[in-house]
Amino acid sequence: MSASGPLAGRTIVVTRPRAQAEALIAAIAAEGGEALLFPLLEISAAPDPQPLAEAVAQLADYRLAVFISPNAVDYALPAILARGGWPATLTPAAVGPGTVKALQAHGVDGCLVPSLRFDSEALLELPQLAEAAVRGRRVAIFRGDGGRELLADTLRQRGAQVDCITCYRRSGPTGGAETLLAAWRAGRLDALTVSSSEGLRYLVDLLDDAGRAQLARTPIFVPHARIAENARALGLSNIVLTEAADAGILAGLRAYNWPV
Image (cartoon, rainbow, N blue to C red; front, side):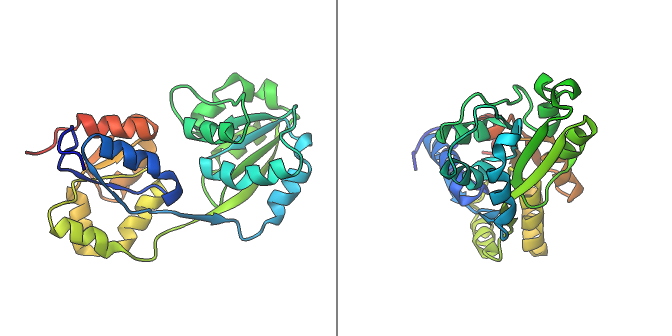
């Protein structure tokens, strides 16, 4: 760990899924901090591969394919590309820039994405998803199990024929809380970064009363207002709302008024 930088001497918990945590861990280290990886979501393939196989087989019939997260790209694109590539008439869309980068890594460009906020509401505000643009069109939404129905429901209300394809599964950690508790007891856990309301609920459930008390005293950096709202609903008040994605989280960490 670097001896200098705005995060020098700070230990920051990174709770992203393991496969998506590398960039934020490296960025924290570059600012002098130490990242402690504690994934709150484990990602695996959907238990039933048939819906994805069926969607891929008729992909050319869709006009819009929405990817909810980088995980959706990672679990859907190999099957799509293996069957013959991305259809020329199919427009890709993504909720945020991380998903756009994941699509580009597979050679899929021209992605629709919001420019300011990165959520379903912002995506639905794009003119390409307005009623006049989607009425009568088939739309595929590639996503994990569960999650919000706002995007699918709104597009259906606008006249689109929407198929939601579950291509991966999310699950919470089954243990490991002692790692966090030990860091708290040693006085070397300064903050957590949390990018998922679902993951935060898993964390609260995983901790005992002493751990929840420590969590309540620790600043939690979140990149979306909805996560902040859910955190407060869980009884947490030391919430720092940042700009979106890793860059926003890192900027929030750098700007924070750390205790001496």
